[in-house]
Structures are given as structure tokens and as C-alpha cells.
Image (cartoon, rainbow, N blue to C red; front, side, top):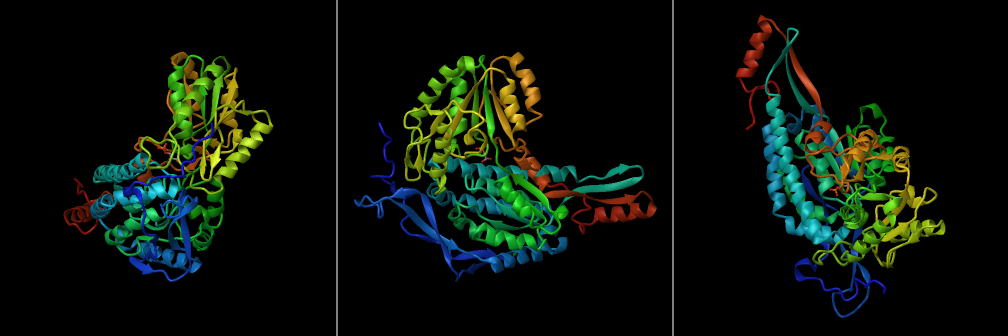
Length: 540
Ligand code: G3H
């Protein structure tokens, strides 16, 4: 039986309806929400709906609003505002006491919390994320901000004492880096963007911030909070095409940190535009092709459950998704049977459907790309082993489980970032291990086995190839306090609550040779509150 058309006859609960177009006609530069008078770009939803929620059953991608189509000169204005606000480290924000910066961030988080409903609704419409996952994305972001504040306070307390070594006193702290160009991905347009932006800001940097490709309007409810909480020029938000805006900005050489969650091709192209690349710090979260290795001595039901969830949560649109499954030959038949049974139980529908797992895809060209991967694999011997696999209705694609797959197929190597699961069987453990070591990516892997003797050598080998080995569970980023990083083309710098603060700052110190004169100067500095840097003050 074919899959049901999830768009036809869709009833949109009142609380999730968007009755008026969201016309984002302002942009934030230099602390002002400036009116935009130029061309606009239409923001379309991942969801196709009846054209007026009425009885007419016309399928059309829903237009939910517009955003400014800003140009090179606007991008440079934003950059100038950020450069001026940083003012070579002499600006209000980089000089501000850490305590005061924290207060601003806390105020921002408070104002943001009040916009939860609006932001969640837009996450659902713009990227097709389920209500539950959209709420999680929002709440996780607030928690990330709170944890960042706590971590920074702890770090500041640790730095609030003097070191004495070899006759030299030193106060060692971390200082900001300068201007950060910040860009997040469309699959976590709020969370992952803010996981860059918030640590960058709290460390005293100033920012130019370009929203992701999809998931743009969800920032509109937060613009006032950005304007109110930060000094002018500290947060500059620009809308438009990446190439148009980012190219002129990078070519000036005035960006100190490129903070991007996206793919390595884009990252390479952008960093290559900077005239002095040695001055550019990179904080990059990039693509991955995380593999699961399912061994014969595993708990099969658990392995299947984790692999389905790991491969298909948010339709496989997670950088951490399991993008290839290596299953031992002895259990492959049983595994595949249980795997496709579980896939067939996944709920599909529109984001507001309770418990929904599979939803429409925001990238207009993704269904075509998935079909290309399927056609390529099936022409080389793979089969779609699940019922309805690959069936497509507009922006919705039912997951295709492909078996057997091999190295001749594109899906074996390309990061599909969508609902398609390649499975391959192995007899020699070196097959999956070699796959992982030869891959261009090195983010995470999952191992499924109950036996510590089986696991131990694999763990020890894999930790030197990837940056997180998950035992009997899917790959994932969280909890966000754990290091999130990758080797090869998967990342540069570590992101976690703790590490991001370090990625967006640099160690800098004030040193005093021991002696009568300097002791006097140092005591005076510590006794009065004139310097924010040389201080033994404790943030509580
Ligand atoms: O897209 C990549 C995300 O960082 C994945 O995060 O593992 O929590 O879904 P997650």
C-alpha cells in the first residue's frame, strides 16, 4: 500500500496556524533595527498546504514570509559596525567586566524564553521539525546559555588569583579575539547557531551573524532582545545569500574568527577569501559519515532500535546521524528484518502530529538527491528492502533502507543528510575499520556488542580515528557539556559548553617581575577596582 499523502486534507491545529505573512522588513546593524527598502526573498515552508486552509485541495509550498535580500554594501556596513564596536579591544564590550557581560547574556536568555511559542512554531514551519523536537531545540538552547554562564563564572574564579613562578607574578585570564563571523546550519538553526554566537559574545567578541539557509524567520522574535541587551555593534544580523554577503566581508581581512557549522567545501571556500589566513581562527562543525558496527554478540533489539533512531531522527538530517550501518554477516538477516519492521512503525506526518518521527524536508532539491542516490545504488545491485522505501510526495520522502550496499555506490561515501539508510554486511572486522580510517570524515562511531573482550580493542582503535565512540547507542552531540569535535573534514576546534568558551578566546596575561616596586604597583592595582583584568575579585 502506498504511503498516505500527509499534506492532503491536513488539519492545522489553531495554535500552529500562521495567519499573517511574517514580513521581516528590518535588520539589525549598529544597535539599530533599520528599515529595509530593497528587494526581499520569499521564505517558503517545508510544508505543503491547501492554499487557504479551506476546502480547496491545492498543494503548494506555503509562503510564510519574506526577509531582506541584503547586498554586499549592507554586509560591509554590518562588518564595520562590529569592527567599530570591538575597536581593537578598546570597545565597551571587550573591556566590560565579565560580570556585566554575563548580566547582559542572562537578560537576553530571559527575554528569549518569553518567545518560546513563536520560535517553536516557526521551527516547525520553516524546517519541518516536529513540535516535540522543536521544543527540545529551544529548551536545550536556553540550558546551553545557562551552562555557559556557569562555566564562565567558574573559569573567571579560577583566574582570579596570581601565579608566582621563577620570580614572576602573573595574572592569567582569557581575552576576546575580535570580530566573529557566525553562521549556523539549517537542521538546528537556533541551537547550533547560538552554540557559536553565545560563547563568542560572552567572551567579549563582537559579531556579524548570518542566519542559516532555512530557519530564518524564527530569529525575528528575538531581534528586539538582541537590540536591547547588547551595546551597539556587538550583534549585527544580516539576511541574504551567503555568497553575496560573506565574500566581501571575508575579503576585507577584518574577520578574526570564522565560526561555521556547515560543510567543509563551504568552509574552505570562505576561509580562502581571507587575505591573511594565519590570523583567522576557525571554529568549524562540518559534515560526517558516522558508521555503526553491529557485532554478532550484541543485544539485537537494542542495536536495531538505536540504529533506526540514529539514522532517521529528524529524517536523518543530523550531522551526527548514523549514515552507514555495518552489520556482521551472521546476524544480517535478523537485523534487516527487525530494522525494516521498526522503520515501518515510525509515525510520519506534519510536525504537529503527536509522536511524529518523519516529517517534510526543508531543502527543495533533497527529494531529487535522495532519488539519485537510490537509483545509483539500485543500478549497482542494492535493493530497497522496506515497504514504501523512497516513496515521495512533494517534500516528504519515506525512508529508503538499502541492502546490500558497497563501495561502488555513492551512498556508501556521500553524506546523505536525509532519509536513506545504507546497510552493508561484513565478516572481517577490518572492513568497517578500514572504511572509517579511509573516510574523509572522523566525527563519531557506534559499536554494538555485549562483550567487553570484543569491544576493548575496537574502542582503542576507533578513538584514534574518530572523536566519540558510542557503546550500544546511536551517535549524538549531547549532553552539550561533553566535547563535540571531529577529525579530518568533520571539524576544527571543539564545541561544548566548556570548550566553546576556550575556542572563542585566547590566553593572555599580565606579568610582574618580583621586586619592591612591582609589589607596590600590584598591591595598588588589587586594592582598587580600576583594572578589570588585574583583579582578585570573585564572581559568585
Ligand atoms: O547536526 C548535528 C548536531 O550537532 C547533532 O546534534 O546529536 O544532538 O542531534 P544531536
